[in-house]
Amino acid sequence: MINFYSENDFELKDVSGFENWIKRVIASEGKKTGEISFIFCDDDYLLEINRKYLDHDTFTDIISFDTSVGNILNGDIFISTQRVRENAGEYNVAFEEELQRVVIHGVLHLCGYKDKSKDEEQLMRRKEEEKMEMFHVEQ
Image 1 (cartoon, rainbow, N blue to C red):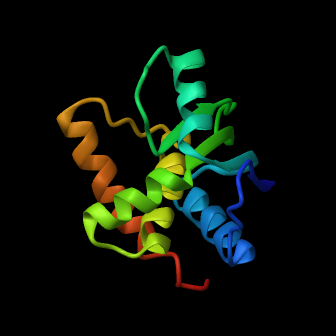
Image 2: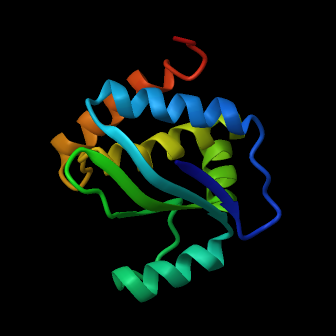
């Protein structure tokens, strides 16, 4: 089950489109969908989580808490829509495209992909691109 919650005034458009896409991405990685919650929030909300649980005092666009068991993906993915909007402007892409990238970035973390080293980051970017192309493809 995939849940979408909002701790700010953001409302996800095309919930069923996102849900179907996320499930297809998970299946394409040989995993199963458990319970995944996306929580949309603002910078201050995510900063507090970053400080409290990760001991980082920086703004970020996403924090994933992975509670997966084996191949069944479970977790909470917090996304700052403020940061997504700012990053979209910085990278000169539409907000919706940047949101898709961040959403799938979180899902890829639950799939086991990391982004701490240069090599891990490059693989993560390639996977993001591959999965972004799946968004409008119906199966």
